[in-house]
Structure formats: structure tokens, C-alpha cells
Length: 243
Image 1 (tube, helix red, strand yellow):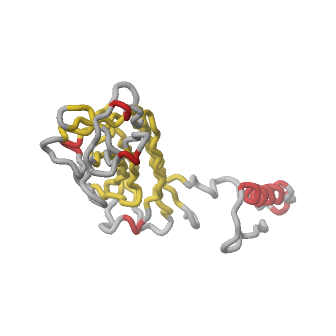
Image 2: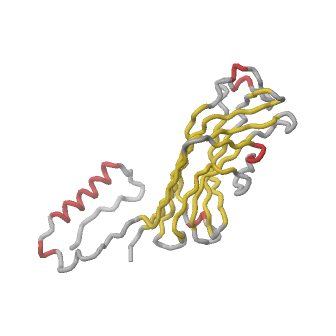
Image 3: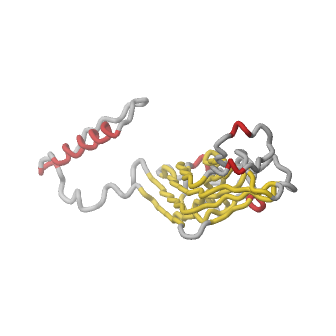
């Protein structure tokens, strides 16, 4: 029972209306099939298995989580170690990314950053270079792999960055309009090229750290980030012909 379907041309604009029209055309053709066009027992089994190989999701709420640069200082670009936990980690069922039919693992993560606060020379201080950093990591063959492209940063919102012409934090209370209650959203697709070891992927997590460089450790006592609720989902997808 052949069904005509016009593929989207390379470089063509994809719109919700266009995709809907394409599927509507397929629906119309299938619904208009003559009885003789469907062979006996054709519909006795599933021909289109789920596109989802495995999916995991988790969320957190309740008490806040505080991370400090004393323990979770930003380790540098594309570093897998040195990050702190956000409490958001989920699992998938041993996904082989090198499998031809595995499209990848879609990751959707959200975290609410309640505030950033710091103490400099024993006084509450502000500077736009105080930043919270977040990233996605996945577990392959038992080892965590860092996705540098997913790193996201939020600085302390001082409200008047022009005052900060040096790395030294300021302690004037007029900067108390610091960042409060901002959402961080990270979306990415983990592909086979992200997994050089070729190990089976069975976990995904959101990690956090604090950037507070440029200040003497003897004068900056700490810089904290306070995390509120959040969630993470990992959806392993398959495509092409299903056998």
C-alpha cells in the first residue's frame, strides 16, 4: 500500500504548518485506502516502534543547595572534574551511541539560581565577575564526560557594572540589587561524536561551580551560589529504518 510523501528539500524552511500539512497528507492517503489495498494480516503487528529507546527524568525541590568556591571553584573550560552537584542526575538504559539507528540522547535541564553572595575583607561584597557556572555531563562506560558546549554562566547582577573598573569587589550597599531568582535552561543532543571512548551511556547530570577569580584568597572569604528547584530529562532517540 504505497503512500506518497514529499520530503523536505535540503535548505528549505521547516515550519510547524508545513510539517503538519505533510503528516495530514499521509493521514488522508491512509484513511482513503481501499479495502483491497491492505493485505490480510498486515496490521497484526507494530510496524512503527517507539522512537524513544529509553528515558529518564528527575527533579528536586524543597531546601536550597548552597555551593561555595571554597570547594566548587570553576575548574576551567572543558574540565570534567572540580564541579559540584546540583542534585540533578538521571539514568538511561545503556545507550550505544555508535549504533547506526541511535539518533542521540536529548537532554533538557533547568535550574533556578536563587542568589549569588560573597564576602570580601570580612564584608558583604559585589562584583560582576562573581559568576555561577553550569554544565551537562554524561556517564560513558562508568566515567563521566564533560560537554563543554553546554557550559552556561550567570553573573552577580550588580545593576551598575560601570563602577567596576578593577577586579576588586565593592562593598557599598547600593549594590544589593544582586541577581535573585534566575532560571538556567540547557538543551543539547548527545551524539556519538561526543563519546570518543565508545562506552555505553547510562547517566546524565547537571553540575555547577563558582567563578570568583581575580581576588586574593586572603581577602575573598567565599562566594556562594544558592540553588533552588530544578529538573533534568534524558531521552534516547532512535531513527532510520527500524528492524
